[in-house]
Length: 146
Image 1 (cartoon, rainbow, N blue to C red):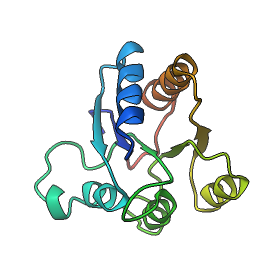
Image 2 (cartoon, rainbow, N blue to C red):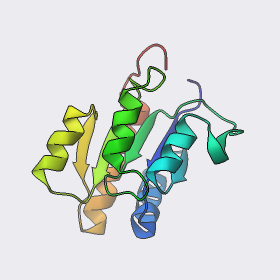
Image 3 (cartoon, helix red, strand yellow):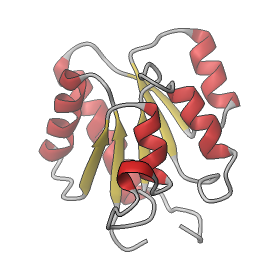
Image 4 (cartoon, rainbow, N blue to C red):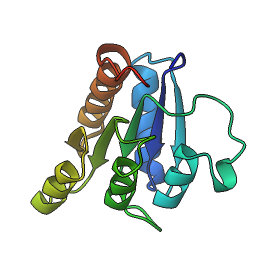
């Protein structure tokens, strides 16, 4: 994949804004696409529905996925991604406010690559998101077919 891109799946406008701001402040020039519910995420990734004519890379470099989403939960999205050979190895980071141990367990059982709890304080949130962006876009080496 030539163009490294993040897909942010976030239904909370404030968390979306804070995430985008943190990535921008970390000087990550990469594109960030945003969808706001689980069905939109699947449509985006599989280029279906409203995203059938989407241009750009077939898949993002990483998906930052909230758990508590409308229409389909983040865990449902993750399970569908892992069940499809086109997205089975796509890096997925669960980025959530949930501190529920069962959410964390189910996320890993469903195949997430990382589970990150959103810090409440903005400075800590910004630092966490910046570290995630730097790691997944600059440090991590994706599987060969991606």
